[in-house]
Length: 66
Image (cartoon, rainbow, N blue to C red; front, side):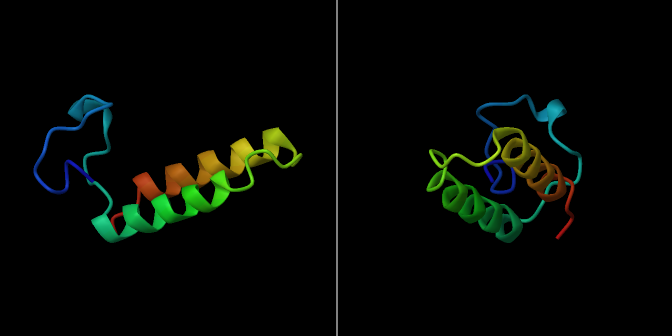
């Protein structure tokens, strides 16, 4: 989101981020999904499956051109 608004990324070098960044709307939707997942972080779900789902969601979002 910082890069989309013209600021320098905080946690990653710009070269580590995908060249075609996702739109702010797509990133905002991803943030909302992460916050919803955080509500159930202590639930005894299968941790491996949850991590895989979160990683797949992150990959799909970050590679999105929407």
